[in-house]
Picture 1 (cartoon, rainbow, N blue to C red):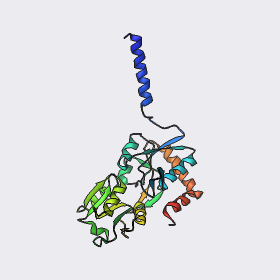
Picture 2 (picture 1 turned 90 degrees about the vertical axis):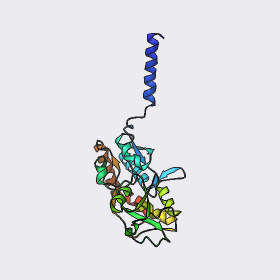
Picture 3 (picture 1 turned 30 degrees about the vertical axis):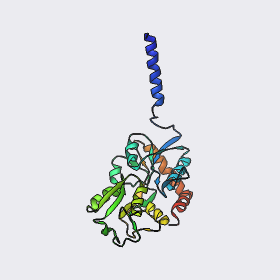
Length: 248
C-alpha cells in the first residue's frame, strides 16, 4: 500500500473512532441526568415512560434554566462513580446527602426530607420496633445508605443485598426476607398497593435528598439552586410535592 493510502486510512480510522466515542459533555443547552427509575414515587417507569417526583422536578428545573434534559438510565450503585467519570452531569435518584458522599461529589440544596424505615409483613408479629431486627433476615439495595446503616447499627442482622428496589420488596412480600430497610417514600408507596405489608411507625433515620453533581460543576449547582428557589416561590414545587406525596 502506498504511503498516501496508509495516511488516508489512518485519518479515516481517527474520524470514525472520534464519531463513535461518547460525548465528554452535553451541549450547553442540555443537562445529562442519570437515574435508577425503580424507586416510586420519586422515579419509576410507567407505560414505558420515566415519571415520578424527581423526574418531574428535574424537568421543571431544566425548563426554568432554559435547558433540555438528556436522561441516562443506570443502576443506583453506578450513580456516583458514573458522575465522577463524567458520564453525565447530575444524578437524580432519591440520593441522601451523606457526609461520605459529600467527600466526592457536591449536592444542590436539599429538595425533600426522607429517612430510612423498616418494611415488614403485616402478619409478622416478631418485628414490632427496629430493635427487633437483630437476628432477622433483612434485605437492602446495593449502594444505598441502608447497607452501611445496618452494618454499623444492626451487626446481628442477616443482610440480603439486591440490585433493585423491587427485588427487595418482593423478598419481603413472598417471605424470603423478614424485613426491608429503605427510604420512607418508596416504602409507604409500596405499602399502599400491597395490603399484606406495613411500615413500622418508628423510623430509623431522618435524611435529606439532594441532586448530586461533580465538584467542578459549581456554576451548574448554583443554577439549579436558583431554579429550585424559583419553583418554591411560584408554587410549582408545592404542586409537585402534593401530586406525588399528598398533603403533608
